[in-house]
Image (cartoon, rainbow, N blue to C red):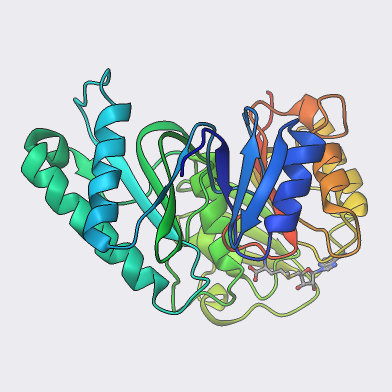
Length: 334
Ligand SMILES: C[S@@+](CC[C@H](N)C(=O)[O-])C[C@H]1O[C@@H](n2cnc3c(N)ncnc32)[C@H](O)[C@@H]1O
């Protein structure tokens, strides 16, 4: 069975929000869905919830590992006839983790495919990278999403939105540390030595710790206490102020904001930061627990809204490490 629909891969449990995003914001038609994957018809250009998407894909079904791997190879060769691989390309294999043993099955299929590729296209196989692309954007390579033991979605042209599971640091005072680290990856930019950072809602200090590790000086704004690794840096200056009233003494290189507050309240406050050019780059988290997430994304992305007119390249994304929240990353116009 095959079709030419698209598929979008999202965090498990966020399929319904992905469907709503596609239908309400992206003008494409969601079709069926399975854990971590939404099929659609139409052309998707950008998105918040999907980590990867491919507008032109097929579904391959077969019962054996080797036969499936052979069919992946046939698909790859038939769909890259006009492409000359001269630099590295990425083969991304993922699975829905919906059934025990599925990840092992995916790995067996992947290894069997790599064997065939090595034998049949040695030069192309040497250029292959078995990992996520380093940069978000459009890629030509191979995207495979294994939905059950005998079935997968496949595409050679795909978009990577930048989400990635990040490596933890035992000294990081919170799991939230992983979010800001992932935010840098989506933005393709991170704090540098001697940068100035304001971290609104900093405690226990994961985001501050992340910037201090890179040599930045951080003003950590929170009434709550900093903990663990965040206490080891004298370049983290803890200020027990109200984040909504804090005004920086000079322009900051970075604004971090991770407040557990009503998102429109946060958006209003951030609009002051943006309008006054109090920062250059930003990573800002909006919790959507009590509001409609699709409406919130539409307000955040609105070209004439409170935030976008001030930015160059801002992007709203649902990070791998986000739960009921989305993250805005970008830089301000000068
Ligand atoms: C999710 S936690 C931040 C976690 C932090 N990013 C980290 O990596 O450890 C939210 C923080 O916002 C703080 N907060 C909430 N409202 C605030 C306000 N008006 N002013 C300052 N801090 C506030 C809370 O005290 C809490 O520590």
